Structure formats: structure tokens, C-alpha cells
Amino acid sequence: MTDRLIVRRDTYYDSVTLMLASSDAEDVEGVAFAAAVTATPVNLSLIEAQGFDLTGEHPGPNDLIVALRASSDDAADAAERAISARLTGPADIATGAPGEIPPRSFRSATRRNTDLNLAFVSVPGRYATVEVAQALDAGLNVFCFSDGLSLSDEAALKKVAAGRDLLLMGADCGTAIVDGVGLGFANAVERGPIGVVGASGTGIQELSCLLDSAGLGISHAIGVGGRDLSSVVGGAMTLRGMELLEADKSTSAIVVISKPPDATVAARVIEAAARTGKPVVVGFLGPIALEGDTPANVTVVDSLEAAAQEAARLEGGEIEISSLQSEARTPGFVRGLFCGGSLCYEAMNVVAATGRRISSNVPLEPELRLADVESSQGDAFIDFGEDELTEGRAHPMIDPSLRNERLERESRDPEVGAIVLDVVLGYGAHPDPADDLARVVSEALGRRQDDLTIAVALCGAKRDPQSIDDQAKRLEDAGAYVTRNSAQAARVAVAAVATTTERADG
Image 1 (cartoon, rainbow, N blue to C red):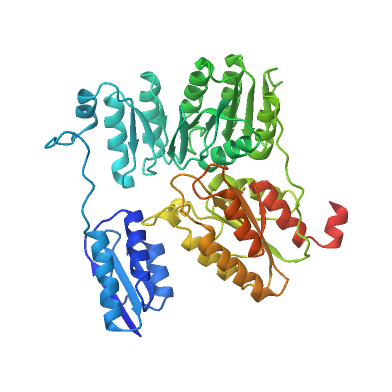
Image 2: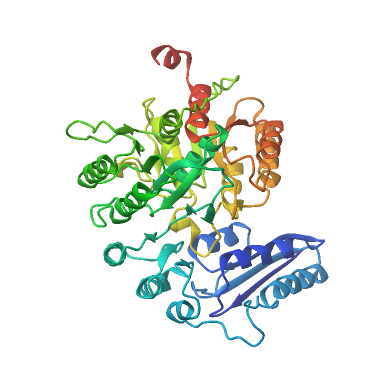
């Protein structure tokens, strides 16, 4: 066996390109392991876990590491060539007239085309603040996929955007659907009368997919980033989004979803909802204390599931939630492994409601924060989309390998009785997440001999490119319980691990 470790100093490629380069190398015959990654702490630990010795290399976060394990030097050489071919391949050429030079700034782009009104910002985090500021200065609405803005910069830029009647979706905005066009991670849902404002990307996805399954559609879904309803930002873009949906004639009902916001900001959102004059569902995921009476046109709920059901009811539809439960009884701890932050949060609330204390890297309570994200203790949930696990890596909805590896590891813990996880389909997501996941699930359940339950929250729409029915069948054939929302997947897990006494008490 040949091991090869290459460090390229001060070399940057985006995480998706590196993921594809690694995949190209692993497809070479005789290659057992291949990784081309930025030298972040998470990536270094993964390489060391494979037995590679980094002693003396001292790689930094601006360096590129290539780690190869192959059956021969020839196979390693071929893998290295495959990586180089991907990294040095021809760059995409901007469309336009022959010889036309692409614009060098947002302002020059808007001078050339006065119809432009949206900038999509997806750059390394340290550059995001400048790019967003320049886009706003050019009079453009902004979808900011990058997560590098400080909270104070986000607040200041959103104040600028609001003053210019512009939208700043983000930072760290995962999803939006504007006039039928998906931005970031979005699903192929039908057009319809329900407008959405969401401080949660996968929350928007699950909500819109549940509505789509009921034959209802989305007029627009405005993502605002997970920190918009903090006390510092003050809900600036949530309020702006509601104003736009109020004025939109194609929108007859509005849904606002977020993790529990600052109480003062929550009150501000409900007051704004009342002013729209349209029926508004406000979904704050988890308990929150609200003062005073709720306005007549506003309904406040505490889950994505309930928000979707109430929005469907407003439009004369109905969302049926499956009563699927685990047939097995597999007592033990519950572990959650999620690509979507809001889906993770919703599932944690369901499990916590049974009295279990859940440690997490995105905890429900500060004192429940995981001491080490690499080591689960007791009931524990991990959001693999958090910054600490995505630095230098593609988002887990694009590259779920880190989550799948953790699933394999957690399944070997005899104290674990159930594992709950999500699979998110749609544009931008992995083209076939069931391909590797079904194998990992099948092997895990085969090892445990009927003392482990695996529940999957499959978020997707019937027109998504991955084929939701095919994904569900392959995961079910592997032995997983497949549901269409995270709350139901969590209920499957807690039912499986509950003892007879716990069931009687519940």
C-alpha cells in the first residue's frame, strides 16, 4: 500500500471543486482513500484519523493538502493526475459578445445592464462584508450565501439596505425562492399563494415541500439569515420581507419562521404581521413567552410542522402527518446527525419534550453545549452545517461524507438506541444522497442485529431532480424509517427508545 501526502502552500480552491477533485481521485482503480482539502482543523483531524502523519508539515488554513492511499505507486500517480486535472481544468468563460471583458464590479455590471437588481454573494467569509457593501452601493438586492459577516456588520448593512428599500438576504442565507427562481438550496415547488419569510434555510425548504405535497404553492420565499431576529439586527429584513409580501398581489397568506427570536423583536414581528391585513402564520421553533393578545389575523405556532399545517388550512388545504412508528423497541440514547440547522432544532425540541437532556453544538440551552463536537455523550444532536464543521468543506447538503462517517461511528456505540438524521433534496444539494447513505444505514443495522433504529427526515418535492420517491425507497430498503419532516422522524426515534414505563407516562 502506498501513502502519499502533499502540502501546497498558499493555495486556494473552493470547497466544491476540492470535493469533486477528491471524488475523481477515489474513482481511480486501486485508490482506497483520496482527499484534496483545505488545511482546516476539521480536515486535518480527518486526515490524521486515516493514519496519515502530519508531523513536521505544520499546514495552515491557507494551504491545500492532498492525501492519497493506493495499492501501488502507479495508482497513486494516476490519482494525483486526476486531482491536478480537476484543479487546473479550463475556467468557465463568461458569456457575451466575442472579446467582451466581464465587468470588474457590481457597479460596472449595473451600468452595462440597468435591468439587473440582484447580486449573489458566495465568497470566502473574510471578503463577504466588502462584497455585500459594494452590491448595496450599486443599488442591488443581495443574496449572501457567505457566512463571514460579523453580527455588527450584518446589522449595519441591513440598516443600509432597509434605508434604500433593498433586501439583504443573509448573511449565511441558505435558501430563497423569488418569483419562482430558487436561490441557494431550493426545491422545485409549485407556484402558489403562500409567501414565506424565513430566518432558516432548511426551515423554508421543509415548509415549502410540505405545502407542495398538499398541492399548495409558494409565491415567494424570502430568506433572511439565522441572525436577523437577534436583538442586534432587530428583524430588519424580516420586516422588509413582510412589507414586500403585503404589497404582492399574488400572495394571499404569509408564513414567518425562525428559531426563537429575541422577545422584543418577536413582538415587533407580530405587530408587523397584524399591519399586513393578510392572514399570517408565525412559526417560532420552540417555546417563547409572548405578552398580550395575538392579533386576529395572526396565528403563532411552535414548529415547522404546525406552521405548514396552519398555512395549508388558510388556503383550504390539508397536510396529513404520517403516524409511522418504529416496530422495534431499541432502548438507549438518541443521536441526531443533521445537515439542516432548523431541521436539527425542530427534532431536538421533539426529543427534549420527552424529558431527555440533549447536548449539541447548537444547544437548546447554553449549558447543554457539547464540550467536543467529535465526541457524543448521552442524548446528543449535531448540526453539520455549523461554521465549525464547514470551514474549508462543502456544505453537508452538497457533501454529506462527514455526516455519513459519523453515522457509521455512532452506530457502533452499543448505548445508542436510535439515530435520527435528515436528507435534503433540491437544487444545489447532492445529486444522489441515498447512494452512499443507504449503504451506511444497511451496514449499521446489519451490525446491530435489531437493537438500533434509524429514522430519516426526507425533505424534498416531487419535481426535485433527485426523485424523492426513489430516494425514499432505497433508504427504506436499507432498513430506515423514512418520514417527510424532522418532527415526525424524531417521534419515530423517541418511540423506539422509550421503555414501557416511559410509554405509559407519555
